[in-house]
Each structure stands twice: as C-alpha cells, then as structure tokens.
Image (cartoon, rainbow, N blue to C red):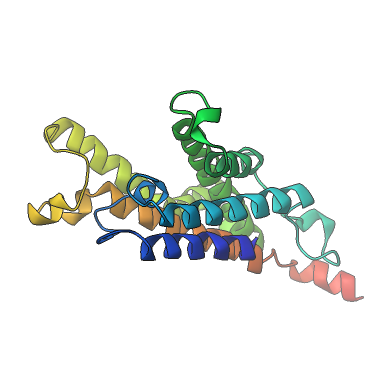
Amino acid sequence: MLLGLCAFWIGLGMACWQFPGEYNWHYMTVSNLFSAKHNPTGHLWGAAGVILCGVAGVCWVGLGIRVPPAADLRLRLRESQLLTVGFPCMTLAAALPGDWLIPKGHDWLAVIAFLALCSGLVHTWVQSVMQRFPVWAAHRWRGALALAGMVLWPVAGAAATQGYLALVRPQLPWVTLAWREQNIPLYLSFALWEWLTCLVLSGCLVMICVAPPMRAPHRQALANG
C-alpha cells in the first residue's frame, strides 16, 4: 500500500512537471492534471499513478488490513467496508476510457471513490489510533469525533468556502489562475482545500500502514508469561 501511495504522488509529480505552462496548486484543481485537454502528455502519468495506487489498495484490502500475526487476534485492525468500494472506483475512474462509460461516468466514479475513501480511511485511522492509545478509547464517542475532526478539517474548509461562494458570491467563476490576478483570497480556493485533503488522507494512510495497534500491557505480560 505504501508503494501504491508513492506511485500516486510520483504520478502527480510527473503530471505537474509535464503540464504545459504554469501549474499552481493553490488555484488549479487536481482534475487539471488528469485532463487530456489541459495536460496532453502529463495526464497519462497522473492516470498511471492513480491506477497503481488503486490496484495496491484493492490488494491491501483484499488481503486484509491487520497487525503482525503474532499480535492478539482481538487487536486486528478491521478496515472500513467503504474501502472495498473506494479503491475499485478509484482504479476504474482512471483506467476506463470515457466512451466506455455513461455521460459523466468518470465524474460519478471519482465522486464515489472520494466519498468512500475519505470516509473509510478516516474511520480506519480513528480505529487505529484508539486501539494504539487507550486514552482516546476511554472517551469512545468524544474521542472518535475529536480524532475525526483532526483530519477532516480540509473537507470542512472546502464545504464551508463553497457554501459561502454559492450564497454570497455566486457570480464568481470556478477557481483558475485568474483568481490570483484578481486578488481573491486564497482560502476561498477549492483547489487549495482539495490538495490539503489529499495530503492529510495520505498521512492517515501512512499511519495506518506503519503504526499497527499496540498490545495492552497486561496482554503483553500474559503473552510473555
């Protein structure tokens, strides 16, 4: 899964590098990198990175997200079932040609993939932290909500700014580099929040992979006894 995540970011990096003209992540959304129209050569790199990451995710979930075999079976980390939906949709959205799908098919697959992966990764990450640090588990619901808030703030920021723009500034066009010339505040840019969300969710995925749940001290003592 970590190799798949590396492939995702390398693919995006290569897509940015081959983007014709300037690519500014503050004012340009991720979809620009995957567009054959806007990124004739680089979009293939971006698609390849997403496909490799999606396939790795499918294998990761299919084989089971778990702690090392020697650990207590009761402490196995159970992934959210939403991940079994998100990774395949992510792979199909990048791999299937547009003429194979219904109109807006790519958009639908991308939206479903994002909602499923975002919800699934946050759920699995919260579970991982609560198993690893009992202090969070002591206040189950409050702890879970606090942890979820720590990683969902970019999503909340995107929702809040889009709601504000729809109600207060509906005449403002979709975010582009023109926003920079018009001195529109950066925090209103959907592109900024989108990239921050990608970074935060990637961090959650890394933590899930490298920090399995710990045994409780008394269980460790019994295991060593």
